[in-house]
Amino acid sequence: MKRIARLAILALPAASVLLSGCAPLIIAGGATAAGVYHDRRTAGSVISDETIELKAARALYLDKAIHDQAHVSATSYNQIVLLTGEAPTPELRTQAENLVRGISGVRLVHDEISIGSPTTLAVRGEDAWITTKVKTGLFRIKLPGFDPTRVKVVTENANVYLMGLLRRDEAEAVVNRVRTVDGVRRVVKVFEYID
Picture 1: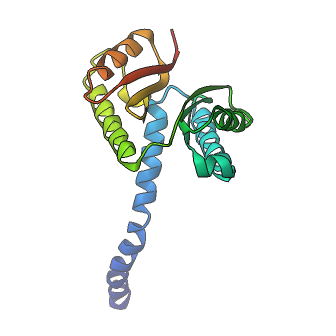
Picture 2: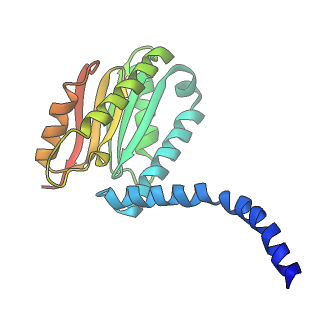
Picture 3: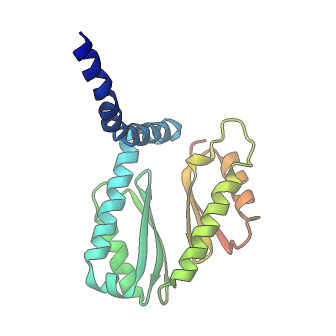
């Protein structure tokens, strides 16, 4: 009996080390489930959006002309894709749009790719900072039933694009808040309204 007790005591640290490796998986799975719980999209729609984004990123990456000359990002929300970035020619912009439009499951494409040279890493860093400030600012909106995590924020060259399934009063409050964020040049609504 004493031998079994000693083995159990020795096994506890090993078991805790092995189980601690599972903790991030459990926490990450819980975070994803919590995100889906608060989202107005179905779980299937969330997965479909992630799949569309992966397929779009792959298609844009594999197209040599787009990869070498342009900076294009695709964001999907409820199977509506927002294309942002820069392409040096209208033809390259159309080429990127056609690639994404051909992806299975895409309902609509909003092409906001501007014609010009790709932005610098410094500009992209500033865009990331603007996105952070916008997302933080959304938590100051006080409306019954409003959840700021339901708003997808994409910033490109100081232009802020807003996606999500919102009520009209929520969308108006979001746009009014975003317009006050320092550094925002323009606000573009790509919402779907639920009322």
